[in-house]
Amino acid sequence: MSGESNGGFSCPLPFHENSVVTLAHGGGGNLTRQLIEKIFKPAFNNPDLETEHDSAIIQVTAGRLAFTTDSYVVQPLIFPGGDIGSLAVNGTVNDLAMSGARPLYLSVGFILEEGLPMETLWTVVQSMKRSAISAEVKIITGDTKVVDKGKGDGIFINTSGVGVIEPGVKIHPRQVQPGDAVLLSGDIARHGMAIMSARKDSGFQNQIESDCASVSGEVRNLLDVEVHCLRDLTRGGLATALIEIARSAEVSIDIEESEIPVCEDVKGACEILGFDPLYVANEGRFIALVHPKDEDRALHIMKKTGNDARIIGRVKESPEKRVTLKTRAGSIRMLSLLSGEQLPRIC
Image (cartoon, rainbow, N blue to C red):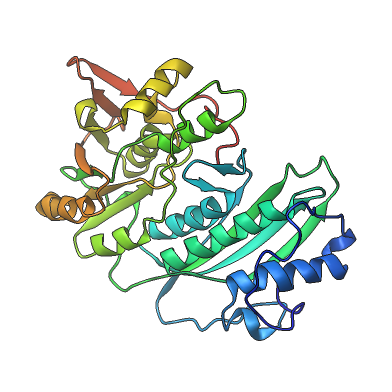
């Protein structure tokens, strides 16, 4: 986005609400300049974006940096509880937080389809602005390309993020130890079911609201206790995250179904569609594996968000590297990875 602007300024919706994006070859020309000047720069305006360079220049502090990237192709673009813009910011911020990093900067790449209503783009960009402010992160560089109608499905967004890891913070699956408590930050499966309920052919009368949110503030508070591992529960959900950690740490994990909160509307939607909530994606939930001496303190910190945080299980030493679920009926179920993606286009 740098090098194409005369500076940031505030403005209302800069195009008529029925105007659409017209194809601009190579991402340049008058249209791209208008998008930058009238939509992107007013939303993301900050000193780093004002340098009018082809690259953002950032001051690197002493210590370790975390760097991540992700692409977002969700359909529908706007859904209950969020949209592709808030999802792109929060998803990347949360990935940084899972390494124990404090998110600092994001880059944003937009691929826009010819015919996209300008009002939709404005809505998405303003949502990104609000999410970035809430997460205390700056969007400092980016790119815009326009593709032929039928080639882009509205909007695709790529975001990359940089964060700093403070000295002494060591968050990694190999830090996990037998006896660690497994803490879940809130109810599960809402994002995946929100996307399904928002699709035109879903047949749902009552739409479910996504849990899409930044968790970086909550994670920063958790770093005062001995946290060994963090993992956000995106594609593959809670079960997949636990299985991956168990395999990396070479331990087994036992969890209790009765301690895993699932909202009634989400539970009902999962039953109708045949989905297991344990495998449905979340965009504002994570697990923390914490030393037992600090589990009560960690739970107290997580409960401050009001998201019904729970201790759902415990790590045990075992060569089998498996995750077992004690069901409400008292039976034991071994969790395994799904052979394919359960829900496409949810992030």
